[in-house]
Image 1 (tube, rainbow, N blue to C red):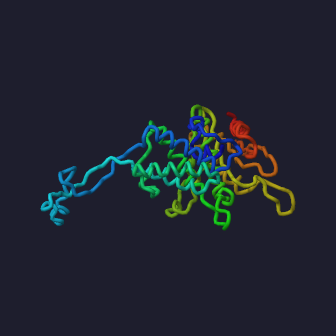
Image 2: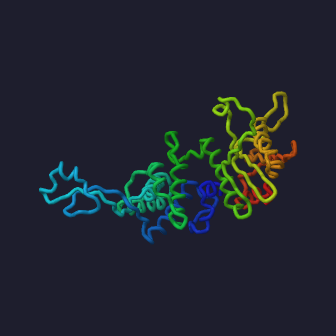
Image 3: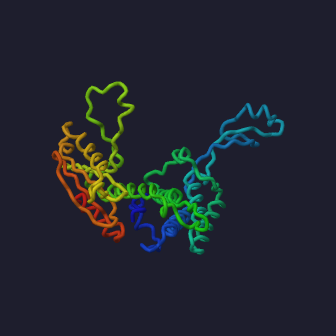
Amino acid sequence: MLLVYAADLAGFLERAEADVDEKTELPELLATLLATVVERRLRRSLSRGYRMTEAALPRVRGRIDWLVTESGSLLRRGLVACRFEELTNDTPRNRLVRAALERMATIVLRPELSRRCATLARTLAAQRVSANRPTRSESSKDPVARHEVEDRLMVAVATMALDLLVPAEAAGDLHLTRLDRDERLLRRIFEKAIAGFYRHELARTWNVRVQHGFDWDMTAPTPGLAALLPGMQADVVLDDEKQRTVIDTKFTGILTARPYGGESFKSPHLYQMYAYLRSQAGRGDARGDTAEGVLLHPSLDRHVDESVTIQGHRIRFATVDLARSGADVRARLLEIVGA
């Protein structure tokens, strides 16, 4: 469920008629979703785009490149160098999908699913979609429009598959993924999933801002301070008509051991949230004056749900048990923000 929200797939979840359940391994889950949406897209033909092409032709098409025509003595052979736009299936989004299919075909353990992905990759190749994964720059030139719902789903699943499924470096176990071993990646998924969850579930009734930056309430800064002062960026900020809730996700244990026994909340996390909340107070926004903060962690060995009000700001220390069912996790995340 978290991966679905992390990839912004929640809006398409019911439309992907894939036979998966919570016991399905991650590579098989994504490969099945990817194959399903690509097959559906191919029934209506791939989206196409224009590509600038240069060719020597027997008749004029587009613009004539006189320099190439003269230097190559093309006119003597009845040809002229032309530059023109050509409609093609070889778009960045289609190349991204082919790259994802080929990756899935080598990763998944189920032979029939591997063959299914490989067959779809060959189908795209037959339609002249090249194998090279597009760069970020190329992808930015081929944005998926809001009305292109099927392409949005296909590109979202392909991106998730390519970004998150990388064979492990350990020899002899090529089917492990970075999800099994890379804590930084897990932290990124957790943060993106929480943000994606609230954006999808609360956008109709709340103003949901993700990775929202706060400004320090500064006076008389010295000339070099701006370049040295650390920025403030909260994972999620929720606003309704009266209240603001700032959520910061931490993929770590919520408690730490004290030097001389016992446990406590982690000081840097509390100081960070305190700075988020107090920096917005007294600046003309009533919601900022009473903003609440939530430090959200996954449950490890115990469930924690404590809160305190400090200088008019309620700060809540909460955990969510990711080992529970998707419905329970969803209910817990909504309860934390009072939705």
